[in-house]
Structure formats: structure tokens, C-alpha cells
Length: 115
Length: 113
Image (cartoon, rainbow over all chains, first blue to last red; front, side, top):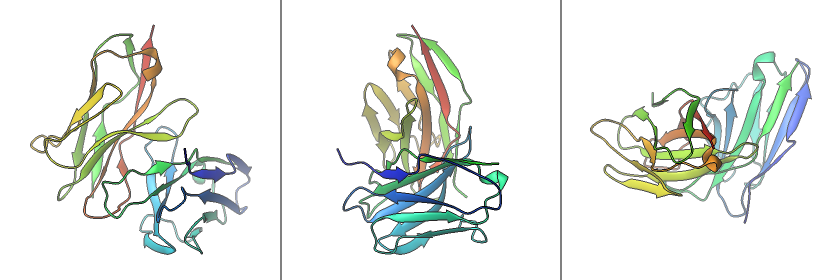
């Protein structure tokens, strides 16, 4: 069964450092999402791509976060500089959706700890 | 903006007990509604969904009915098992496009043998 791949699974960094997370969606899925899940909370959407284009980045803190999906396949989420409050699980999801009724498939996540 | 409210956890039940996890939502238009589950050490998985009023989603013995009049999507199961222990998230998308999900805070369910 096809899965969404993410790496690394765990990342520890010091504040003010740069970090990057990678996501490889299910093959053929045009829509890709990055979510942030703070411990004890539900995931919150950071950015959504349709192919290589950003559809929604209204909740992305653009002063320090950036995301790209250059060839419309895999994607990278970057934080520079990291802050203590960025400690969270970063989840990637993909779907073949053209409507919101399509299932979003989630990867295992990258757990970030900022010291 | 859109929001989802679900009952606080943890919810602790004995095996074979009846389960209800309450979920209510606030949204404009006609959202699609979802329940996702996160088993220990695993990623989020779709459990069930409903896309219009009065639809019932069901999977693995779980059910939820889209109630527009009460803006609710409560999750139920008649007889829970230890293997159902997980965190359950209620979520919505606004509808009309491949939008991102808005999640509730999650409910941790613990089933004791």
C-alpha cells in the first residue's frame, strides 16, 4: 500500500538554527498539505500545494517558515531561525483531491524539539 | 472562522462498553465532516466521513451521522475493544474544493480489559 514518506522522523535543534523537513506524497497525488501539531492539540494547516503552486499559506509564519514543491512531487518545509515555540510534530498529507471529499493520507510526521 | 469542538479526554471505558465521543462544529456553507484516528506510534488515519446532511459514515463498527440542525457529528461504537485505544480527531473541510482540514483538539480513548 502506497504511503506518504517523511524524513527525518525526529529532529533536535537549538534555537536560531535552521531546520528542514522533507515529504514525498503518494505517487500521483496532486495536492500536498503541511500541518503542525502541538502536543495535546489537533493539527493545524500551514500550507497547501496544488501541483507546484501554493493554494493556501495564510497560516504559515512567513517571516521564518518557507515551503516549496518545485517539481510538483516532493516538498520541503524550512524553518529559519527556529524558536522554542516551534517544537511540535510536523505532518505531511497528500490527496488526489479535486474536491474536499477526497481522503487526505498522512505521513508519520517529523517531531521537532527546539532547545 | 471554522472550528471544531470535541469532548475533552481522556475517556476511559471497559471492554464491550458503548462509546460516544461528542463533536460539534462551526462553519459557513456545507462542510464535509471526518473522524481521524491516531493509534499509538502511528500516523493519522481516516476512520469515516460524511459529506452532506443526514449522511452516516461507518467503518470498523464506528458510526457518525452528519446532523446539520445540531451542527454535530458524534462518534459512536456499540462495543469497544482494547484495540480501539487511540486518539480520535473530529475534523471538517469547508467544502467546494480540496481544502485543508480543520481539526478538533482530539479525544484520548483508553479501553481497559
